[in-house]
Amino acid sequence: MRDLIRAALLCAMLAAVSFAGSSTTEDSPLTTPCSGTDLKGFVCNIKETLLYIGPMISVIALVLGGILYISAQIFVSAESRGRYQNVATSLIIGAIVLAALVGGAVSIYEATKGLLVSSS
Image (tube, rainbow, N blue to C red; front, side, top):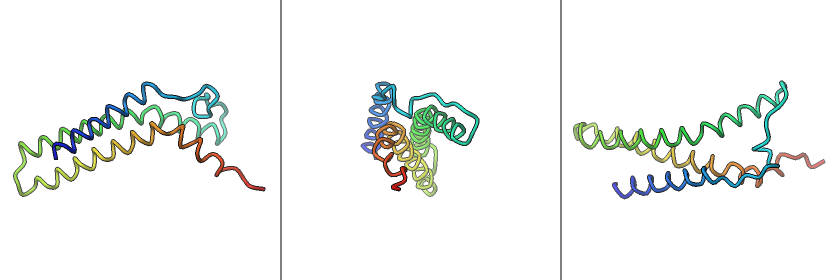
């Protein structure tokens, strides 16, 4: 299980490096500022907020998962240790998935933008 935690920490560090050196272009719709008070502006503001807080939530979940896992190993009895380890592992995996989604948001957008255009 220690190898899993080490792998999760390595993935989190790689995700943090990819966030620092993001390869977004200036003309990308994910980097243009939101304007307007209509529904499009509202959704754009939500998108910007999620892209901003996503990496922070990922790191927080990863750290909390690690702390919970370690404390379950040290302080919790053997009967209930599995529940704590299950929650900790879920936090770590969720943090990795969130980091991958936020880190690849521009690539996901570019790959799927044709799906949202009407074919008529």
